[in-house]
Amino acid sequence: MVDITDIPVEGYERVRRAIDPKSGLHAIISVHNTVLGPALGGMRLWPYASEQEALTDVLRLSSGMTYKAACAGLNLGGGKSVIIGDPSMKSEAFFEAMGDFVESFGGQYITAEDVNTKVEDMDIINRRTKHVTGLAGKSGNPSPKTAWGVFLGLKATLEDVYGSDSVEGKTVAIEGAGSVGKVYAELIAKEGGKVIVADIKQEAAEDLAKITGGQVVHPDAIRSVECDVYAPCALGGSINDETLPLLNCKAICGAANNQLLDARHGELLRDRGIRYAPDYVVNAAGLINVYDEMQPGGYKEDRAMANMELIRENMRKIFAIADEEGIPTATAADRFAERRIEAVRSGVESA
Image 1 (spheres, rainbow, N blue to C red):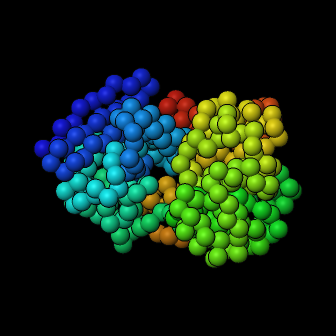
Image 2: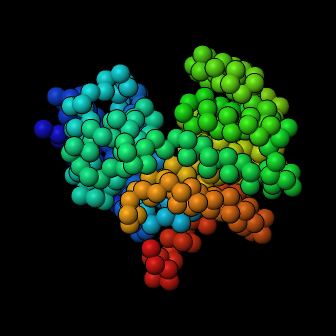
């Protein structure tokens, strides 16, 4: 039987841990805010060094989902789940126990795939709860859609920085050759962009370089290479006190969540003249895609793809807010999201 306990966290609606000795499950689900609707966010499986490290990650990720949904115009709140452990430990019993954990939220939290979890895993979870998206036969794997949304964000960023949204001839340094980074790189190369790639898995980086005609560099070097755009597409926190001085780009537009280790790094980027495309705005297409499963009549890819165009429009608005108010783009994105949440909370706008 899964042992579920609450973890009180100020500013969050509900945070709980689950431990199931039989299957080996040790997980945390965080629901940050449900003003706009139920909290939808992916399920991440990672070998965290401690429960505290996992808790810090899930809190940051779930609050990011609140802002992501708000900016994307979705009637969803922010939530996330993390599982502590080696990805090789996965089993059907493991995900069935996780399904029971999701079900314990009674629909307040809806899950989906994320790092080291797949569509097949969601199908197992679905045996124990209906509060799951991204299932086989519906919206499926969100990674290609996420990559497409980041590409739309790149177009808006290039337009802002260079006066044209053309990717041709632009060099993009991609950190992370995983499922999203790979598709993103292919989209860039298809439109004549140049790709520099790094990944902790050397073979993955080399394979992507062959596909795109790109160049491989060591993961320690990717942040300092000369490029037009740096694209973090791995784990968060890649923009920090150590890496920020190394950046040799005019813009940042990538798929990773929580790219800024701290909010002040957004201001430091602005001071250096580097235009930052806020991560939760440009990587929202995966969320937009799975959200479409919840619409009347079920999932329709054409409708989901059309709604993703909002990413480009929102980036233009956020860049404008940053310029008009003299604030970093990350702060502008937060304000953009907070204004919508407050409008719904006060009854000015309906969710």
